[in-house]
Image (cartoon, rainbow, N blue to C red; front, side, top):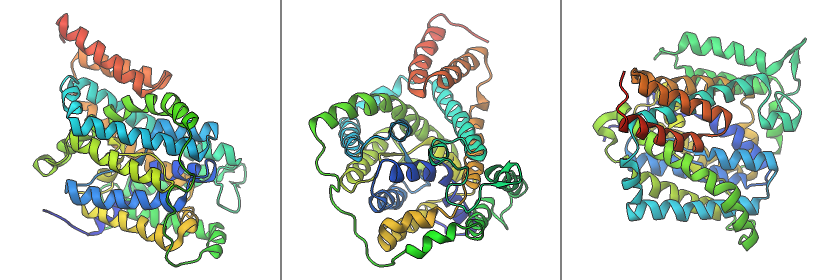
Length: 397
């Protein structure tokens, strides 16, 4: 098993913070989730996932659940219920092997459509973070909610920071001496300290902080019903399309034979176990997003050393600082996270460049339009139907 802890692995390990942290912050501050349980889940999932799969693997919030939960300010009880339901469903799909049968009917253009659409969504979310328009920034009424001031003259501070760090990433994008991810996150956190984010650090109490089991109690029947209909059912198609099938395809493309353990069945089982654990310690529903894998790869991750690095950081934060762990991570400005997200999305979107025939491009275009107008779950279904029709009627380039 090839493993490395060089500077590129360190840089790649932090490449997906742009997707992870804004939603994690929102679910802690708006939905009341346990920061100890949330970050402990993320850390353990990173470490155990890396050790099992033996290649870089991503850990991300489930986008449909987290975005809707934040927007509607749902209770932690409902989010816990959604995590329990989705854990059972994913374990069922993985352990029975049903997911393998489902994956066989998904053609490559649909997989590329998922990757392209997800990549474009990440790019747009990154731009939102830089412009100060993400849900967290809007709800907090500040473009940089954790810094002491919000603008440089008439220009929002997040834009100033975002443009500055975008230039840094562009010039260091292929540097091995000064890896972009490491420079951006490290200097971004230092900038956060200089601009006032250090004030939250005064409340930290380092020690041993273990998570509480079922901190919000056992969800009621009403919570389970609402979670199933409003959160889980819309999430499942996106999870299967992006976190299972597209993620497996991308991992094999990046790492070849080294990623032989990354199978549809294994991904379902590991996500099922992680979500079961997360629900019991008050964390958020998590997945192996293809966008997260592209982010880690884009900034330098090539072995599971990146997983062990970032996982150990999150476990140390969770156990060492407990509820205060979120204060440490808030040192990184939103503009910096937006830049990471933008370049990660660009990396993922580029995987569709091998789709050059008119039928394949049509599938990509339709899926992207539906994603932007509705959501990726509907686009996934439409892509399967359209691809089948094109094949049946033998449309060619």
